[in-house]
Image (tube, rainbow, N blue to C red):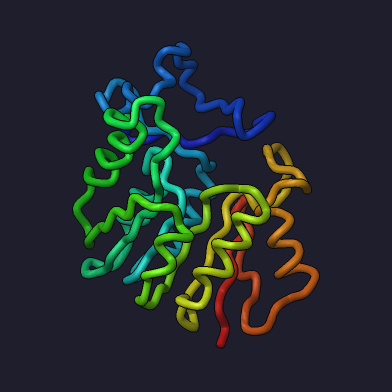
Length: 218
């Protein structure tokens, strides 16, 4: 098994049940990098299917927040053969930056499939946005979950999304058996922009568990 997906119900986004009953020491990313356990997703199987459905055939995909690389791998498996997947994450939370096994596990996972091209951008998303100049047809926002950070990601990046392109927010919806609540930054942003204000030229295209997909219509 390449990866393990999140099972429901789930009490929180910290205490997650991956169904394998792993001993606590195996939780460390070093074991994923060594291949002693699968890389672990922070999304459910239904969300995984939705990511792949929306990523199919896309040519310019960007993910903010990579973790162990499962969502990046999911999109790489179905993206356009000549497409480019840009993965943005500073990987700054490692206690030993020189080793950084979360980053190593992510690289190992995404490299396990060879479709398209992958560009690793080891920066904070707000820094990467300052020099970005390419159109995007799928943007996955799953980085810092504070409301201010999610809003910054939206403000910095949505202008690059082409008509017919989508932005996918993770942890952005309260759902039965899930871990999110109304105080989550992504939930508050989506409720504000797409449920209350309904900003022009953007519409909610799909909602699956905590995922909310918004599409640029014009």
